[in-house]
Image 1 (cartoon, one colour):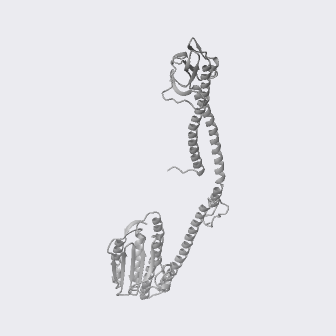
Image 2 (spheres, helix red, strand yellow; image 1 turned 180 degrees about the vertical axis):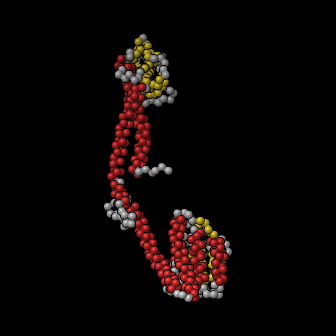
Image 3 (cartoon, rainbow, N blue to C red; image 1 turned 45 degrees about the vertical axis):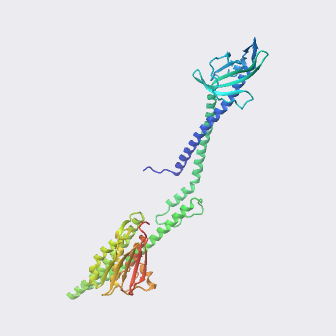
Length: 463
């Protein structure tokens, strides 16, 4: 793909294209205006010549004669671009003087209203050239003659075209100079107008990589303030993300440091002992601590995967998933664990429920919810996994439940209801993060048999 180029260049190119279009339209308009002006000027001259010839008409022995004065044809003497032709016809249409084959007016040619004369103007072809002709009807009232004579004067189009071209070129030259001057002025104006944007660019470029302070909006033009406001909002979100990451790293370090230190101390005590029974006890406790550390590390990795999965969903990488099928596969996988704990695991999913999401994250969500329900359900209890239309997931257990005042806190990272518990306090936090990544809402309710019912509502597939 071609580079987009500068804003200044794009603006000037589009303005130049617009000016070129205006110049073209103006040129056509100027040409027709110039041609009309030339026709008006030369038509007046043609009519003056015809009138001069009409003034020289006289009767001799009952016949019409024409004394064509030199001034009638001298009007065009200084115009070498055109030629003049004339014709005088008597009362009967017979040639009296001039060129005998000069074309007559086409039928239906109307009389001009621009001049007080019985004159008609029309265009014709004569001797292979385009000519402009005036036909003047001149009344004759003599003792021996009484009627209307016709005088025709024709002129080639060269002079008119030359006058129209001169007017057109003059107009184009002035408009071209004006357009060029306008482009230069616009370039200067745009350069001055873009100075605040350049100042903003330098201010952002000169900042350190960890400097996320808000950019000042006061000295900037009103048009740039929304951009700066959007940048400040983005910086605020980025700063919040960095703060959450730093807080998470600090808490994760603390959570890992304590069990690692305990594991190290227990191993050191075991190494000092001499009895095999103490060694075995030390190994068993170390294995349990290692299992808890492995679970904590896996949960931390799950939180890291949520970030990339949420980014993939936001960028349009979500897949179409059957939630019922996903729940069915997870139920089969966790059935042995439920049987080992003496808990009945049931699935209620009568039909396919489709939604868009990230399969790994959704499987992690289901696994955490069901595993949490199994962990808090006593032996002989029940855990029910439901998939309902449209896009609703419920996990219900027979455990002790969660008090109302703690139902918001359990979604916080590393929150434990019982400080001496074995969990890391990340299970429901992971569930909450996955719900936010899928734009889903999660809520906690009392179960019908006194336990806890977790309800997750996903947005419709089309959203």
